[in-house]
Amino acid sequence: MFDHLEMAPADAILGLTEAFKRDKTPNKINLGVGVYKDANGETPVLESVRLAEAHVLKAEATKSYLPIAGDPEYGALTRALLLGESNAIDAEDRALTAHTPGGTGALRVAADFIKRCFGEVAVWMSDPTWANHPAIFDAAGLETKAYPYYDADARGVAFDAMRDALQEAPRGDVVLLHACCHNPSGVDLDAEQWRALSAIIKERGLLPLVDFAYQGFGDGLSEDAEGLRILCDTVADLLICSSYSKNFGLYRDRCGALTVVGASHDAAARAMSHIEKVVRANYSNPPALGGAIVKEILTDAKLRATWEREVSDMRTRINGMRVLFVDSLKNAGVKQDFSFIKRQRGMFSFSGLTREQVVELRTKYAIYIVGSGRINVAGMTEANMETLCTALAKVLQ
Ligand SMILES: Cc1ncc(COP(=O)(O)O)c(C=O)c1O
Image (cartoon, helix red, strand yellow):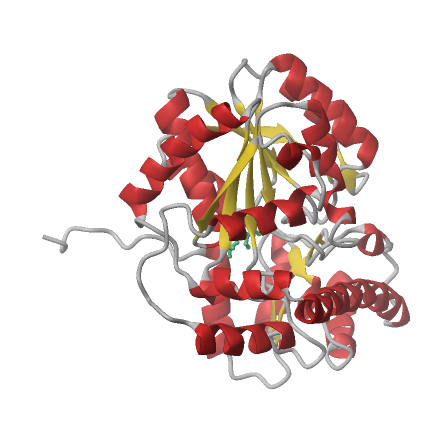
């Protein structure tokens, strides 16, 4: 039955990690995969998570199923983190949340929900975007379209072109937005641009879908939600796909959420009834452990303070590496201006390296970077910075 099948192409980013693992070169450096690394190049379990997990396992009384949308308290805590502790949407009871297996699970459920309830609409996504975005919406049978986003010359957002493209989008189409720490470019909209964009979305009758995978990795937990909150002040309906993979380090526990905001409680409940149908037919109900850990941390003042400090430490380390990288390149004799890396936010940056330079870095220096030139700044450490910048200086000559 399977003999005639062609091999599917390897995942571009995860495939790179496999190649990195096989590489025997000492001092090899992986700036490919999107995982946070600490100053020792490790991705450890957060202290808050370790403590919370011990409490959760001790208190666990059953392994019976969770409800289809998960624990409602987990949903409420998630919304408080996304929208603010005393947000207007929850005060008006206009949102509901489904606990999903990671942010990817949230995106796929959102995609199936859109296909089920809105049929032939297109999903507009930034050019460039996270490689899995088009794959997820394609898999749900939806058409995907791109709006301009990254201005390579200005190393910033091509906002005028983005606005012009979305102004032409047909009513009812979906606009996928990165809440912060844009993957792969590292460039985000500012508050004024979020305001202008929210007005267009409202006027054009588009459905915003906000992907929030890096809350806390840019400028702070609530600072990073500013754009989303501006959008919520303007439009009545939206979908939010959020992830606890990065900010709680719960990558393999697959923990995220899909939040639906409607014009009324009744509207949100109608939407959630369809989301539950989608979940039931996909994976039935969510995995419990990650969500229980998040709930334990967010409801225990001491654990929460520990977690907030840990998020702040991760963010400070990444932003510190941005500064050190730019300074170290200069010290290594690189003439090109890389100061834009300091302005970008989150784990990723578009370095501007060409495909040829990326190949040379891998083959000659065992430095692994995605072909687009996207680098994971969190893969940099004080220990590998000199090796990295010396190699880059040679490649950039
Ligand atoms: C932009 C973006 N969205 C969503 C996700 C999904 O994260 P996960 O499914 O691991 O929670 C990622 C992960 O890399 C991402 O970069």
